[in-house]
Image 1 (cartoon, rainbow, N blue to C red):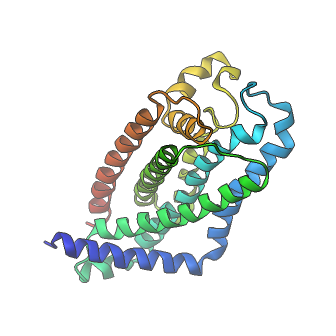
Image 2 (image 1 turned 90 degrees about the vertical axis):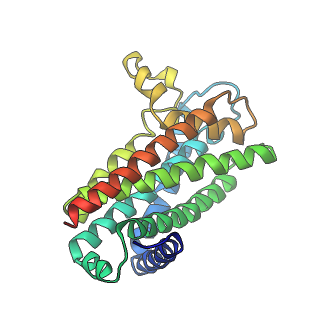
Length: 257
């Protein structure tokens, strides 16, 4: 069995491989980066004037940007599912196994590359948000907390996507399954306050994993009280990550028997 340094070395090599594949599939990368920006511009300029989010926000852009930052993570992680599914379908996994590279380094490489892509995409979205009027007021500690929450969810969603890639039988199906993750920010406080939704939707919107993350980002970026929201968000992210890693390990063993 490989030791820890060996596993880390293998994961590093697999990360480089996944990033190289991303460079060769630049159209998918650009799409995952540009789609959140386009949605942010649509919400701000098409719908923003008709949405009342409360008097504490100077403009709708101040409300919606934290939700778009989270949405960006969902779109970006979808490429992980497709990449893992393509590996399983193409037979390259058999080649890796002959080189004594286990399943977890292969999957970790996909997740690490997804994290890098997501961080670049998030930075780009944030830069555009600044250009259209978003003005954060976070403290230094608040910025660190924002980075922790975003990074935790990016990693957790990427591992979920890896598991989906193992579960799906085709890359097309893998891309379709990840739609659910991209959909989750909509029935949350990402774009409108939960109180403005129908009463039957409040329970789900208030208690799904996305809402505390977005409330944390919004409160921290705008220097508003956040209560226990960051801890709730990180707890959700940790739970999702543990389940996703364990599930990925089981699915990889099943698919490579």
